[in-house]
Amino acid sequence: MIRVLLVDDQELVRAGLRGILRSTFGFDVVGECDDGSGVIAAVEALHPDVVLMDVRMPRVDGVQATGRLRDLANAPPVLALTTFDDDEVLAGMLRAGASGFVLKGVPGEDLHRAVCAVAEGGAWLDPTVTGRVLAVYRSAPPSPSTRDTDLDRLTAREREVLALIGQGRSNAEIAADLVVGEGTVKTHVNHLFGKLRLRDRAAAVVFAFDHDLVRSGRPRA
Image 1 (cartoon, rainbow, N blue to C red):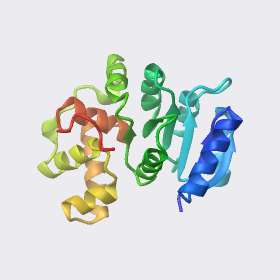
Image 2 (cartoon, helix red, strand yellow):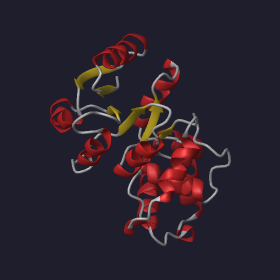
Image 3 (cartoon, rainbow, N blue to C red):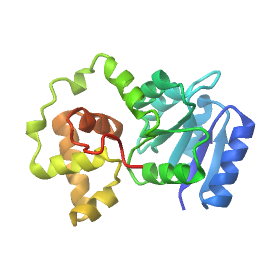
Image 4 (tube, rainbow, N blue to C red):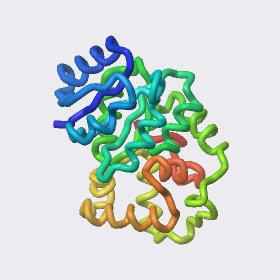
């Protein structure tokens, strides 16, 4: 059972999400926060598998809270929850380390798949706004950790794994696709992250798109 922490400043939104996640999909909603300031304490106390985080909150917003989570050992992945016109904020969430984003109001099945994908170590970028958000993400000056990356440093298998990451696949799904063990996939992921100086899976998705490794033009949904 996937353990979810809900973070949203609107009580009605949390109540709706709680009902869908628990009753419809059987997730364990282990806790809720009405502001990003309480996320660290909640994560340390409740050990969720995924943090479903609103991006716009009055005191500590989703970008700040996600950035703070990155400093925790074994921090859970963050799935951003937002509206249609938050491109700049969503790009900020990716830079802060979020594993993906899903729009408020999506069909319940999409929310279910997004939470599962992120919990399993994958990335989820809602295809409705992915192109716009990635354009904003790329417009920022590259950080020193991602300058002068070189795709030629990768082995053929590492390049194959990177392409599958770009499609939003989890390590378990990649292992099944390539008919190898999940531990082998984790080793490939760690190696390619080190060679390309990528900080997280969302950055790997962007890199895969920028280097035309994702044939479909958008992450798998």
